[in-house]
Image 1 (cartoon, helix red, strand yellow):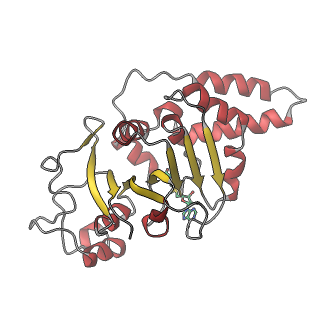
Image 2 (spheres, helix red, strand yellow):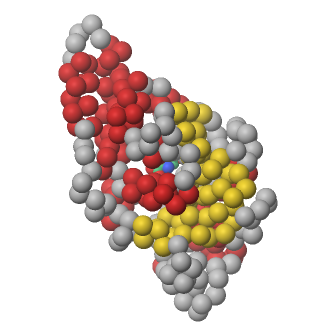
Image 3 (cartoon, helix red, strand yellow):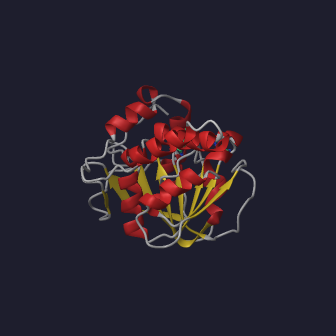
Length: 256
Ligand SMILES: C[S@@+](CC[C@H](N)C(=O)[O-])C[C@H]1O[C@@H](n2cnc3c(N)ncnc32)[C@H](O)[C@@H]1O
């Protein structure tokens, strides 16, 4: 995904967010300069890598995760296709991250990264982070055990992984890779909220979010159109949607 473009477009308007991470980087980087400390050097590099890519407390996802936490009260969260996006752990105490990329392992096992999360977390519980380095298409966790699953720019996560969400649990899903519109077709999920970037809140009233996943003709999106979305760029598709948002919140209303 064009991350820098999107970061600007969805830039948070919050101005009161503290930025202790800048200090943390300096502290760790100076420790890293110590010639007898190779391990510290690596540790600082992991923290820097994460902060560089996800911008620490300026990560534009944080208001979305906060609004999701407020609405769902989720504690136990699954994040397949996470990359090193562990800012989710600022808002949720127990997150299981899944990614096939082996290079991410050191980031999730790094004490300085975990310390950064603990310093900046927004809940009182202890932080628990688990990283599973594997393909999310293969089985990995207890079925129906998560309060919430996150899908962001990692393909169609919903198909292999929605079985891990407990009944009544939630699914925060972006439409960047059309996973949200794929979920919209499913009878086991109900759309309950649409993230409004202007207010950094979810629209939870059905009348307010009417028009999402509906064509200009007022018809709900169908499976052919979702397939077409995956195959053709927007300009070449045979339909247009009334409204589009970056993130949607679905609730699992029954087992598939
Ligand atoms: C574009 S990144 C998005 C990262 C993060 N979710 C975000 O929104 O910034 C996609 C990530 O999904 C991972 N991924 C893609 N397919 C996967 C699969 N089948 N199993 C596990 N990880 C996968 C990639 O390794 C990559 O780290």
